[in-house]
Image (cartoon, rainbow, N blue to C red):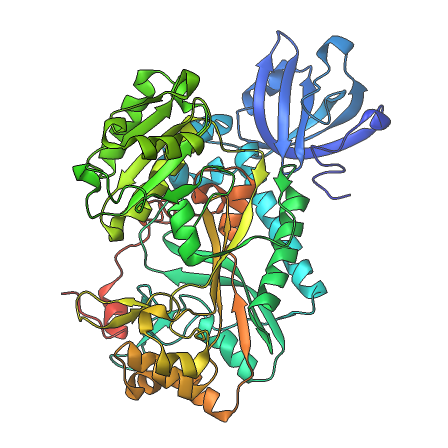
Length: 577
């Protein structure tokens, strides 16, 4: 019992009838019924209806003021019971009221309607937005998920270790946030894009299993599933481990987490392992949504002898949509509109009508033999859509058509989580600017085949021990078996056009540490923000971050980024140009 409350606003039940209790909270609603005033009092835990019989308190009961009320718990009349709240069978008849903090301004928006207003206003008054029980619950979920993840990792024998926030700038794939040094003129710290180097150094230091709920800082543009500025991940690394060891830990933790915090179906372990090349062909993306049953097929050979100009000397993909032949003409027109909006010149299709009669603008370009082959591969009322473009674009275009068809035909199971691993990423890709090769993923990944592969295989044929985990079309994490051997590291960087000096200058601690003996190690880092976003069924990641920046990387609440004083600039040895 405290001076402000004996119970919270979500606690009172029929068992508390006739008790004298004290509650404190925010005034959610006020209803004046002529001599009797009903107030919904809200705190972190819930809502209790408070009843006032004294008209003199009306002026004190402004919405969102914080009040203390004391009185007796009474049973509500049957016709006034509120089944929507846990305290709905009782009410507090108030005998004492203290205003602890009066809301002195009119509200910029109604608290319970905050999700419907424009985002910048919500973020400017985020402390009000967070009072909305629906928004508030997102943060409670985030806290519970984070705590659950921590317990899961501890049960698996991982040691939690914090790594530095101020560190050195290094080329890790994204733009650094730089922090000027006051003591060291002209030099800068950087906020870590991820604890990547530190967790590998921990493995070189003799720790066996590390994890951390790690903040990461990247100066990147916002997306629906990416927050500009900072994000949090479940960062972990394992010594004397390979790919399957890491994927096994990830399967256990993610499956348990999604099962614990959602009623949706979660596919059981082991999660599918899909090679990158197969993933790009079948789904048109390396972030496949496996809830969508549609599969992309390679029809290049099938159309190799067809006299159809748009398919000449180009790869061709096909997507068979079940039952689509029954759709109205407007459906096909909308699909064509979508195709042109993403850069396609058209969208061919063939449908199987009644009696397996082929219909569509491309049928006349197929020989009778090809028409028979196509008919045997389809069911009545199916439609196959065709995508053809240059090799560098066709996979992405086919993937977008697959997604659009899945959504328009309501084929996606929205009551499930479908998690998979994408594996066997290529180590290198061609660099159009230099004519050489560049890394496609983490440059410190171990190549499959190790030194022998680097010395004997074509760079474009070399695969890396790299992997992503994807849920419902959203990448939750990437990871890799690390390259822990300096000789392999030097060769891998040499293929990408970097000499030994780059390793020693850009990654001095890691490169030097590996020359003192480092264990084979591997890890990954699932994104906590994205996990919570999926569990909360939100379309935008900012909905599950307590104090997010807006899409333009501005903190509307605190006013960041902001100007600083000339004295601060001078102390940091900075002049604005």
